[in-house]
Length: 376
Image 1 (cartoon, rainbow, N blue to C red):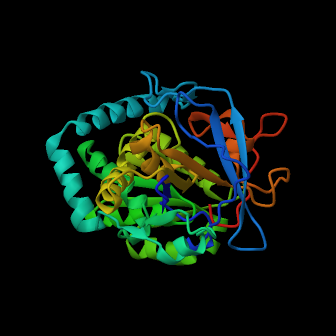
Image 2: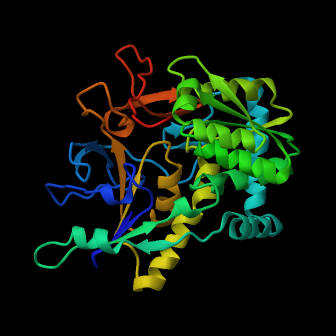
């Protein structure tokens, strides 16, 4: 979502399940910023009440600074890094070098741009939500103009294909014939399977057994596209466990296999790569805002789970200090319960899947499973 002092709001991705069920309540004029080195850490969690159109906002601020670019060992400040077995270090080093090479390779960028335009269907519309805008208009007639960045209109139905296209093209440059991926709700899996079918590559998707039951249609789509979907029964049989299995596969088959991570997670250079391949979302939003109302959004709002959609929207505007960036986490049954997914709000620093990040942990430092009513 993007909001401006000229009363313009744009939603990149719905926080719940429908564009028309979002209501952001704030008791103050506090501004919540994510990812800016000059600001305190701020995160927001949303709690769905009996009224589907109502969200309660909780904010948390901590004093810390982070960096926008990773250093030589892949750290954004103290976050990120490469906490992986030695067998993966050469592959990660090769991947980082290849990624830096394609960022300045005009032929690669031209090929990527052409596929995103003709195959994915970009650019995605920045749609004016007229009735939603009227719904939140104040009695004096003032209020935000709400725009939706319609990533759901991309081929395969989500933003996930932006990253899948980029990473498959990169994998081809590296000579990899086998692609693996993890998926929760199935959108990343469907996008990866689609792109692998487009380029004739072997595709294996790891998915939690519980998620496979909840998202049977996406499992069918992946298999229809020629992908092998491997159910993961370990742990809670959801996304975290699917990611762990995918990493085990990659360690075993690192010479022939490229792992397409779908979130801003994992060891360096994955967070940087995923962010850059999704940055087109924010670049288009800036250009479309200029065309539609002659300026920038004042506020951008996106849900924060794995972070790929949020970072794709936010990254373009990180240096625009007159644009507020709001990330919304799921507070589930409440932040004081054990049934929420607000890792930025309630988490502590720890290491998971090769990177240092905020995690929900118990007193012994063991990972606590986040609660979610959706797959993943």
